[in-house]
Image (tube, rainbow, N blue to C red; front, side, top):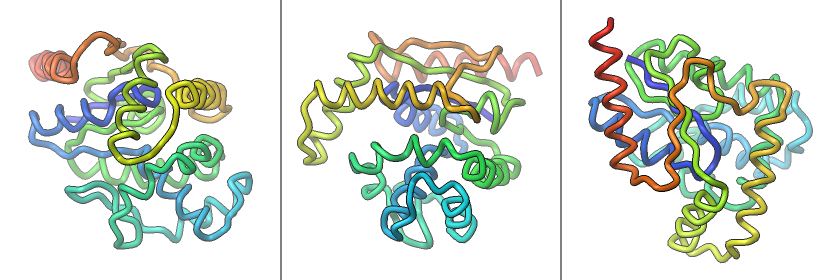
Length: 218
């Protein structure tokens, strides 16, 4: 069973994907964390975010695995570091390079080919797992997504205004939706779920219902 959950930043993908994976007893894979981790490593090694060839080479020599607390890069837990505002500002540029996406998509497919998983990202239903059993495109209004992300960042100790964060989210939406390779878009057969006025528990329950219906059909 492969459940693909796509959507823009702040739509609640990670919370929902973790909830669905927990309810089904299968693995959760956050592909966005892989692009963020590569962005963080590029910053650390002074690789320019505009240099697609160098970034792809960096990806090839980097180990990405996942543990209970999130992504592990070259054996080191990195979940906290990759959530910085600086990484968030650059990740759309890094992830837009075709060579980078080819390398990381290969890694992602290798993981889900070996086991059941809930896999989240921006091109899962369209590129990474077009044959997923259930495809969901999770969205929410820009205002609500900015409010959610603002609360998260404040809890982590990061200081940023709501207005600035909303502007950055809208900018990233535009970059992700217009990139020439694997743009952010719902698959033709995806269920589009708007989480603006809904709790994560309600969305998880709806997706579990879709999964059960898919299992009955198979």
